Structures are given as C-alpha cells and as structure tokens.
Image 1 (cartoon, rainbow, N blue to C red):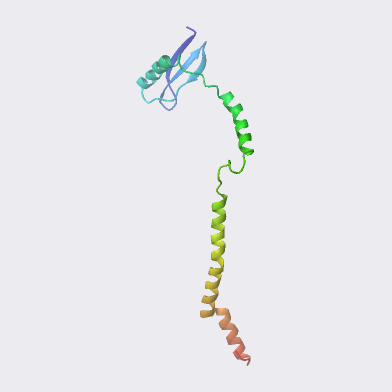
Image 2 (cartoon, helix red, strand yellow):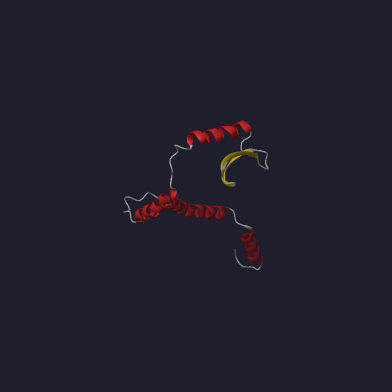
Length: 131
C-alpha cells in the first residue's frame, strides 16, 4: 500500500498519528493522551479532509504589502489614533507638578535649616562676624 496512517508513541509518551505516502511522512498530528483520541483524529481526517477547502496563504501575504502601503498613504483623518497624545498629556501634568514640588522643598528648607547652614552660622559667630 502506497499510503497509510500510522499511530505511534512519541518520546513524551503521547500518541501521535502520521500519514505516510511511499514511506515518506507527509504530516503528523499533535500528541494525544489516549490511543482512542488518535484514532478519532484519523476518522476526522478521513471524513472531513476530502471536502476541506484549500487556503492558499501565499496569496494573502502578497496582498498584505499592498494594504500596508495603502495605510501609509491614508490621510490623517483615516489613520487610527495613536497613544502619543496620552503620553504628551502625562508629560504636561508631570511638568506642571515639578514647580510645585520644588516650591514645597524650598519652604521646608526655610522652616528647618540643614546641618550645613547650622555649621556656617556657628563658624561665623566664632570668627566674630555678625550672623
């Protein structure tokens, strides 16, 4: 017989089906946990295979570059919205918050002099200079 289905166990211990034509493997299936599932796969291929349509994806790939080119030449109204405006809005909010943070730090520093300011004041009083 020139063609046949073979059920075999793979290295992981799962049942697989392979279809051979003239001793050459044409295709093999996914792994099944039971032999009965592999047998159902063979039945399904035999029942539905002859009537299955042919999906030539090589033609779809050739059409894809044309669609991409059309998208590039679309007017701004036709182009989909991007996330850039949202990012820009976030940057604007953060930029507006920076002066407020700096002002808060300055107020805090005025209320509580740091160690450097205390050392400078102490050094100036020792030298006899007015503080």
